[in-house]
Length: 407
Image (cartoon, rainbow, N blue to C red):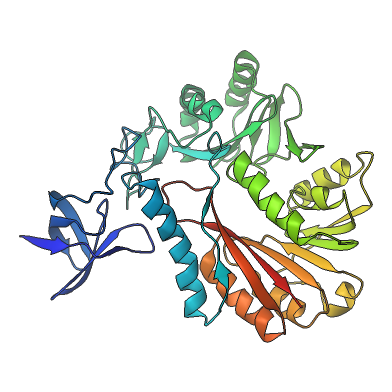
């Protein structure tokens, strides 16, 4: 049985939300102000018809929109969409009682996403390559993806051919594609140990397609040349499936904000450093200590830190969730940058709150965990000056941000 509802707002996951006499209902692919007909199933509604359309509705860029679960808001005009992303940050801070100026959202798409994970070997059509359908494990067989960098969108046939080789393993497959300086880097996850015949086919495939490197669970199978990535002016040899910012423009914007906060720094610490996205830039002005629990990334950072012209960089493998830097280790540090995973850095934040570090730049991909950690730092005597939302994950409910704290 269908019902007619008025969409009031966009929820935190990108669905339209209607408040009705029967309670709230979330309806994908709708916009505020739209009157729609839906089929309700508890708190979720399936869109049947748009009765009154929003003036902010636009034509989606991608033919797969509405079927592919990767994008939620491709149908929304840019201005209200970016304002909504800012509001996600504002609301997260408010839930923790944190007061701060939140800047307008910076769109940082550049030429598109430079890393992606294609899925295959799932559902009824195992050879399908792409992303999962909404609320399903079934894969949408992608023909295009406008949010990807041109190199990745053009690599869809490569992913499809590689999938055909790997299907013999009989397991779900994840293909981690990264755009490196001179080509593509691919890491295969999921199929387990491969028989020699499949390995040989992959080696031949890599040579034929001129793939820089193909790895299996982080172990190289074939390499034409080391994949590299420029961090500022420093060239880094990438480990397999490295953590990089989603877009090159996103990395540039975040680094610019961090370096502005670090002005005048003489001794810096980079926590959750990865390959040194911030550490190697900071080394242009200050002595740096970097920490991360991913040993291949730390090894890549150590090698890149030998680049002439940089100040000393110490890079150490350390699990900051279980072994955070404590106040004694932060005594001679005047600037800290941290870029933790989505769960944030609560344990480390508690140690930073007790420290005398003058300035902290906190880069986050989750507004809720950032707000929680910001509250801890502020209770320790820090002031949160400005929070800048940065949108790298176009059309999704995810938002990156940079918050700057001072004693």
